Amino acid sequence: MRKQWIRFAAAAACLVPVASWAQSSERYLSPWKTPWTYEGERGSDHWAELDPDYAACAGKEQSPIDIQDTQKSALPALKFEYQSGPINYVINNGHTIRVNYGSPDSGDFLEVGDKRYQLTQFHFHRPSEEFIHGKPYDMVVHLMHRADDGEIAGVAVLVKVGGANPAIHKLWQNMPKDEGQTEVGGLEINPADFLPGNTAAYYSYIGSQTAPPCTEGVKWFILKTPIEIASKDFKAFGKIYPHDVRPIQPRNGRVVMESD
Ligand code: ZN
Image (cartoon, rainbow, N blue to C red; front, side, top):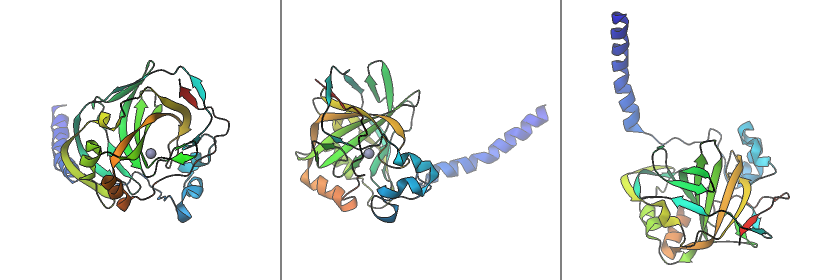
């Protein structure tokens, strides 16, 4: 028994250098095994054919949509429990600029009614993927969350060119120009800095992730009040991603709720 334990301990000790090597390298890996693009042969019209895992991209409840007629209703308040905390990487994943919140204890939550979702990542699109009455905004921030039961909730914050947003500016200073990630060693970011003053007014509907694998059943909350971004920051993002958007998807009878 004791001998076995010693052998096990020796084997475990051997693993240590390997584990620390893997940790220290922390090389950026694309989260997609099958490459896709917004335009061309691997563009949004072909996503569902590229990989069986992307089949949902041809589904009936896809995002984004153009928000036209809505059903006004007393919707629950969105409670944002976001706090300032260190991030380690700013990622350029080949499609957008993204920040991941991997730790289960990051302490950033969205509460809607009695449902609690944890912030998993946020990223940007230019212009906004969402259209409001036929028109996009200059950009959009997508703050993505997940509940314990696996349900995904996306908060879309529309962005228009105007005054500076210091949090976006700080992030942009560390934005990798090519696919990969910039190690930012504990850069303090508060996701609440991407929220407008008014979060009570919003649209909501059931859709999907707007990039492969286009998973459906995503609860979208589109805040009506936009935030602003400085013109120079808007242009800086455009030098990397001038148009990282999926086209508008058919609504297929889905109802869009609007807070009243
Ligand atoms: Zn997005």
